Image (tube, rainbow over all chains, first blue to last red; front, side):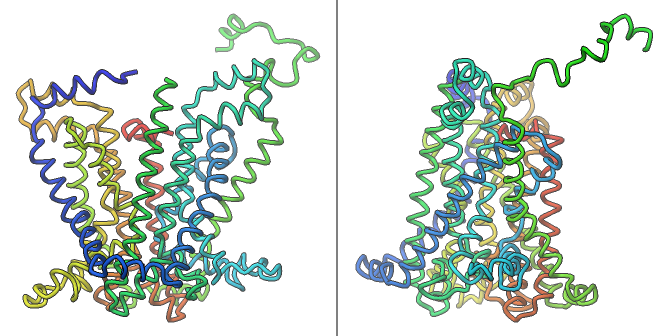
Length: 286
Length: 304
């Protein structure tokens, strides 16, 4: 309803009337620099002591590469699973009525609220050879705990709410009139879903996917218990950083940290790009 | 009531003419057949059941596996009590810091126009995209023995890393955006009209914030604080790096869980974990209550 004009008006009015810009902005920048920016710059500086060759040597070491590949690969698969099932869950919650809906809706945020270490030991207990779920999977030849499969499982758990929570509001606001129009023009239900609904919620799915991916790629607590942590096989990048720290290889630790930060920053830019894109699409529609 | 009804309602159809279901199937064209709905609902609920509820239930089941006595013993043990106290202390320090920051940042960002606003918002969100372990590492690089400030801190006998200040710092980092994130969209939506009215009527800036802005953002603020404290009490990766794992001194509850688990004291580990899980459940209940009761006063995205 109020799209473009007020921001300009507000800008002109606000500058003259509302007080506290200097104080709040100053404090914001001070605190942001102190807690986030300067320490982050510090780790870049530390790894730069290695020089480009040294940095490259650390990061391309087979063990580091395997760890990065596992962290980001498992996160990717987990995020894909969440993109599919998260969209399904969001759809079911917005469109259908069933018993216990409010309860399950509240439970979806559990991975946000449950400490990662607790999630980690719980998943391990469930999926180890004598666990509730593991005892049925083991005879089938599926080993989850202490394998890369366990890492994927933990990544899926930790990223579960992201897709649901980004798709849900978009789906709620989606106009049913468009679907009715599609139906009255002769589209069958599947065509309507693929051609009308999916394009509307796709930006949200992508945003949720990226958020889940970014979160899972850096995840540590819930993974280390279930991963088994075998070098080259089920060792994740954050664990490798800790191992390097314990060996007092500070430069090496910061090099791996910088590699992870670089990948995460790239993801952050991607998220912002996706949000701008989806906002633009949304803006066009209303 | 019965007398009026006969005046208002049309006479009921004789039974043989009554239609089986509703006269018009509303939105039949834009909904799925019942069996498809049922399959999708079952799939979604099975997914949630297997991935969310089962781990939660297993925490409590494992904790009580050896009976109440071992459960209670694991919790009243001095190291466990020290861990619980430290966790609460860290949250009590970290959350107010981020609360003040969140309000200040939201005020600056939503009440004024300036260049680079979106960059600032991205920077505030940055800690969400940083691995918790990296968040711990950055403080080691600065305050650790081989860090920038390490030698100076050593000389003056100030301990930050492997002590409580480091744990608080790492917790502040990982919970950095929570409050600001809840407030920014809401305060952006509310605009500045109310504040301007108060100011033109002669209220001071501080008074305006206290009596006009704060009441309209209090629920969102509480919501942010809730998420912030849940994460602060449960943080593992970042805290694990900077804590040094000194029992009874720098062990928070999640770290205590890890130590017990690695020593194969599973019952104890799950007992402490069950307390954390209870915190999480309380958080979820409060969160749902806020969304349900005060959804309109939270940001637009929270309105379900």
